[in-house]
Length: 211
Image 1 (cartoon, one colour):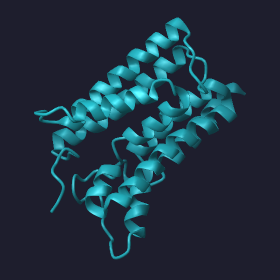
Image 2 (cartoon, rainbow, N blue to C red):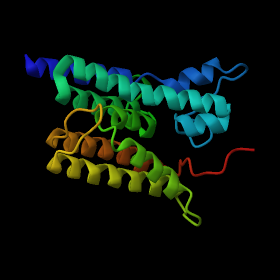
Image 3 (cartoon, rainbow, N blue to C red):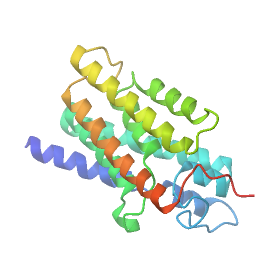
């Protein structure tokens, strides 16, 4: 029965992750019918939505994507406990990055993974956010988005290991365990796969905004 509950949590997390926040936003903005996978950086995420559709749309997409990750973990927790929360969180990021409904062409998973972090590892969430923003603003970086993602991911994994080994307090999140480190590592791999693929194609949110 536990395996069935975990499987259900993963399926539900994946389905929630596939909710196309950016596509919905592009349809709701008056006078636009933009395919974000073909416009701007060609990434269906918050930064590209802000660039192409405006800052308000970008903020809405950002909040929606974070909510997907958080809600997936909460659902997984209800279905299968702490491990269910971790499984569902990873599945949500996978669904966002590789949605079956969009021929597996999704976003980079950064906001959704932050939602996962916010639920399962709230003690790391502020560090993750500050690291990503701070590194991205370092002058002279050629790929600030890529570098900041790598730095924030590294900090997230390092904290996961430390919190697990030392059993440090985790605010409202589940008690740190090996599952925390494994889940966060899996999420980092999924996000990295999308970021590397976008880099190789030349699709990047580091591009200057369209004028």
